[in-house]
Image (tube, rainbow, N blue to C red; front, top):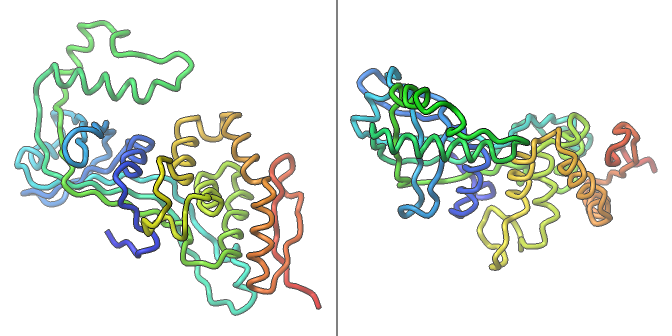
Length: 297
């Protein structure tokens, strides 16, 4: 995966937590019939093997199983938050026009050689783990044991398990790191105007406000202390708390964007390009939206 230095993420605990937050991944293999790709939900054993072990299951009728049984290396792609970035959100556009639109996103890629498993006991444990992982935040969680045993046994006969010991894993957090602070603030405001609980906006805001980073959090030169980086907290919090529909997530986001340090940071960033911010009430009931305008005189 192409990863400029500013967007690299290689810390295994961060990559593992992103996998747990966004478990639906693209499983890619290559075999006699060419390249195959299927979306598959995974569970992760983070404490197994050197880099963790991925578990999943496929329908027995899935032709990709032939590639997996052959044992060739498989690629598993986990996609986190993503957002289109309009060039109209960059204050520097008004100065020289030397900007282009882009896309911000979070991605984790894991590679390893798959093992195909037909053991029904293993399959039962895998679907139990996957169900518990995804149901735990439901008001009334459903468990596999809630269904009739004979029905579950019949369903298990139609699937096959796969296990992939991760041999290589890498992450990419593309969040406008190559832009000046004023442009980053403009992107956050633009995303919030579209969606006040934009996951990507929260990730960018948390990155900018984190006091743990010495410089770029993607260059691994962070303060060594036991903490989860703010950008990952944003991913996990929004993913696991119900995104737009959870009042706690809304409160967390409004509080983070109303802090005085955030407003001061944006004003300081604005001076870099000779612009000034003015308040806008376009986000009625939400955090203040800052709109850039050319400085007059």
